[in-house]
Length: 331
Image (cartoon, rainbow, N blue to C red; front, side):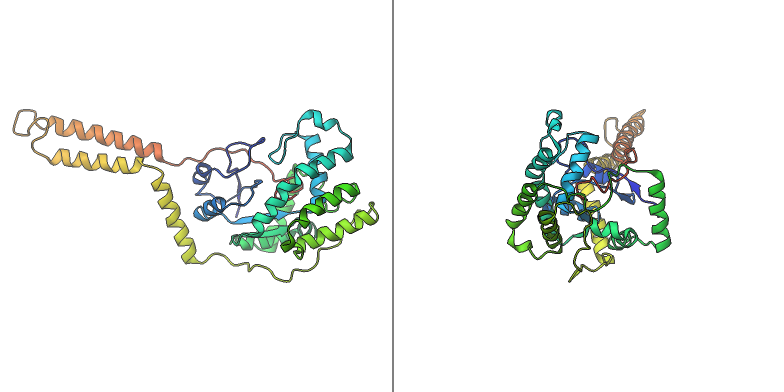
């Protein structure tokens, strides 16, 4: 199965990348992947449920995030949805810019993690696991989304993606091991604000990295994260759930489009007008059937126009390769 690459938002730049329901409706008939930087909300969950979108969340060491953002704003643009940055700020030295990124952007990422951590609809993956075994990570993601794929297909897909090139920055774990101690301490202080997450596998990895950075500051290799004690089942939604989603989505689309209802009303009126004997020109008079043909024809034409304008047409979206190293969900 080949998945389309689409975007589900109307604009990028400094705008928060909240999902657009129009885009969701336009792509409802496709099998696709859409990569966006989206914090959790009940509305986002509801949209994904209504349009049968599986939510896969990719998280990454916050120390690596800082370095990845630093490279990204230098290489591409300082404009981003996480914090305000302009060209004038890029003149700062590396350590100062990293500290600024940690102070202003990392709160967004902690918000991102805390929100999706609380969601029962999402499956969280760690970028560090993906780097170690890409085939396994992709296999688990596809299984969670209910997409059948064997090991050979996954390997072929990864090879095809590598051969086509991508916007990936560096694509390895451990890039944040040279951050300044004060930057590392600030990030860990932010995480310490949430006592309930201190035993999370993700936070345990962050603590281990922080200890190594503060002790040496020169290590490049990140140890494998501790094993998961529990994991969410990789089960495809049941047939009953998929059926409910399908009809709920159709009902939502119909509720948001009055044109089909108006068109049906026009067609019904056209039939009644044709059958009614005493309308504009009674049928007993000469030419009494003329209006019986003209008026319904006008109504049918108007109904056809309404139905045609209601048809969902895919919006052409240029193919955009996902950059796991510099994407918000991967940071």
